[in-house]
Amino acid sequence: MFSFKVIKTEGKARLGEFITPHGRIETPVFMPVGTQGTVKAMLHKELLEIGTQIILGNTYHLYLRPGVEIIKEAGGLHNFIGWQRPILTDSGGFQVFSLARGRGDGKSKVKVKDEGVEFRDHLAGDLHFFTPEKVIEIQEIFGSDIIMPLDECVEHPTTYAYAKIALERTINWLDRSIKAKKSEEQVLFGIVQGAFFEDLRIESALKTVERDLFGYAIGGLSVGEPKEVMYAMTEVVCEHLPPEKPRYLMGVGMPEDILEAVAKGVDMFDCVAPTRMARTGTLFTSKGKINIRNERYKKDFSPVDEKCDCYTCKNFTRAYLRHLFLAEEISAYILNTIHNLRFYHRLMENIREAIKEGRFEEFRNSWHKAYSLRA
Image (cartoon, rainbow, N blue to C red; front, side, top):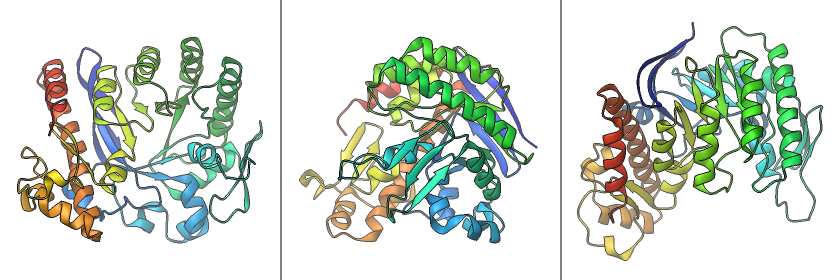
């Protein structure tokens, strides 16, 4: 039902194939974030047209709205949202911690205990409690293909002492998650924590690998640390993960970060950047990012990126997209998102092709050189 194999490598970069009950995934892969069962400003039809293989759903948000019972009555998340391709759901742990900060009255919305996490709905304010067992139960009701255990993601910076506590708590929660998992129609990944301390990252990786799971995720990065630190921690962890199993770098990232992480051996990525930035007028091009709101594009009748094959670039100009955005037309967000996600998927396609042909390093160097130019 589930399988993963590395087809070819170049250095540490890996070309792989991930088989799930809802379809085949070619890796390295980028997973658009569908927080509440939808990728913002996109229809599923458009996602398929631009090459989306798998989407990510958020356990925290879906648990709160529309709620577990409604998704259960619908026959699971695939049926509820009308997406019959693979779905990965995260545990909601990151959202619990990130949304708990800064409620404005000096009080924290979250209490982390060894038993689990007590938190308040960031909108309604009512109290909830996530345990590792409950998070697994929720995701089994959802029926997502890949599920994640509850973990504790710490802030940057943090102390060594607290990072150690969070690491041990994450391992304990993983053991409880493994014990709670009943469905054989889903695979569970372990999450490596350890903050920004090399020895803790190694310890976490080794302990997580001991549990012999289907795949492994690297959590707790892209939380404000310098890129050099993120790259270093990614490399350290990958060196201690089994080569025959998939590796997922959670919440990363920008195109340049993805390319560097692929070079260190990562297979799977997700990030809100392409969709969120599309809604603020930032578009990715082969020569770097542009802000479509800028005056310089008022009479620019070229496409966003002449190398792009997306619907937006084939049919519309920078000038028109600027007009739509300034006019606050809904179509601006749709067209921008189509382009940004296609940019990401095309990057992944080019990466896979480069590894297949044994020219990944050449592609990596030429891509960075072009991307640093002014678009």
